[in-house]
Image (cartoon, rainbow, N blue to C red; front, top):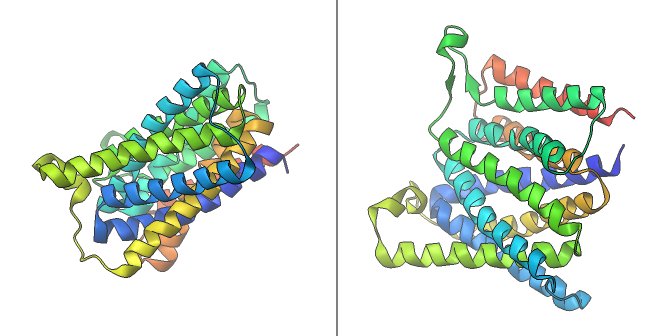
Length: 296
């Protein structure tokens, strides 16, 4: 199995597991608190890694600016995603966000000049179609197709930003070490998200309600899940960064996008959510696409 595929799937497993916990914690703490807490935790862990390894932040101004911009995009992506998960349903939102893998493939070809074999292209298309199908409800034929669930608008914003992040990370890692790039990106990410949280708490404006409101009361377990989410997020980010350093961007990015497929399986198996037949068909498409990509 190609290294890039392994690295991407490692990121997918970490992020897919994180997503379930983040969705549940968001219903008790609000998506903004979950996002800020997770990002702050991951930033602290990456700073510790920098200190322990003796690595410094990027010295190249171009790389530093790019990493900072990616941190801003990341803050928006995570906030949009966790808000979508909070208002759910989880299975639909996570399935839509997984489409960022297909967009990453397209951008990798256009922006980075990468190429795919015919079988790989077919596999990527099949897998992308599969994850999109998990987020679409068919009622009365194609003319009446509609996106399922109120969180889908947030999911679309998240998938675009996640694709941009992946391509941007690959470009920055070409010019600097992966640890210094993701550390600076996450520091900016956490600072921005914590700033938004402070503003939301201070102002208490109605526009912050979608990301601050929580339908269930907070408890200690929800806070522990936020911390665990930060750890899983770092694990996924490290796997992604190492993969981008050593393998084609399209392969790592596409494989990492299967994280929501993990979320979907957990949501159905343990949280009682139900998928429509077309959504089950979408999961089959993901599996078949993965097999096609893995063929040498």
